[in-house]
Amino acid sequence: MIANAAIDVLLPAMKLAGEAILQLQEKKMSFMIKVNKDIVTAADLRANEILNLQLHNAFPEFAWLSEECVDNKSRLQCDYVWIVDPIDGTREYAANIPEYAISVALVEKGIPIAAAIYNPATDQLFHAIKGEGAWLNNTKIVCHTKTTQERAVLLASRSEYKRGEWKRFERDYDVKQVGSIAYKLGLVAAGQADATFSLKPKNEWDIAAGVLLVEEAKGTVTNKLREKFLFNCENTLVNGIVAVAPALADQLFESISC
Image (cartoon, rainbow, N blue to C red; front, top):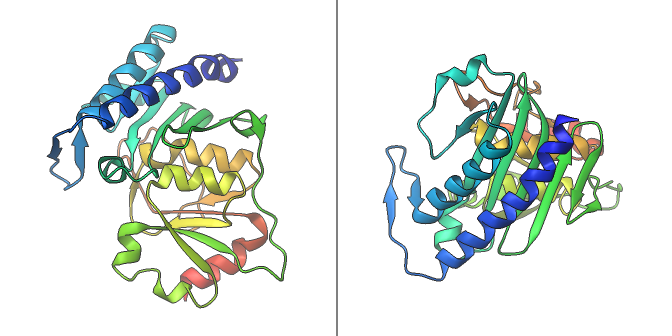
């Protein structure tokens, strides 16, 4: 199967990219501010280069959509596309906060079929294969099964939390700040939190890998209107994301809509 063959190449490539960015982190790096006010470092570009080389060599016919590359619209005519965020959570990476991740998904006709998220700072390597499940460091994972006695744990964006956007949820939930959305999705898939969400637009590369991870870990993941995702679109922005353990889904969407 293509998904299994992709994972066989992807996981070692993620490790190589992770080793490279850890080495670069030890040096004093400069960074650039992009037009959208995000930052980019030499590590983002190096990780992108390693992933592109490894994956393109193995699958030269697959298209490429990455945060750190000019978008080639010919991808829209391709059945198979790698969707890549070389470092999701670059601000955390630059500040040496271990809450960033490399995020890569292979989509087939817009649907993720293989994915990996790697946090090299914690050596957590998540991966998923459509129809086969999700794993953390080769141990099968599933979303958390909440009991009625427990307060659910929500993972919040640091910047959104600082702006006060999560204050209203703290009455009913335990809210924990974590950097990268890709990493947060991996933690939800692994049952280490009950949910994460962002109601603001996200790019496909932020979430494509995490969407498959949560789905294969038996979780629920949609945009903020509870619509399923389709990737490799001309406009790469999606309408927010809500990833949640199934038992909590209705309650959480009710809280969000209040």
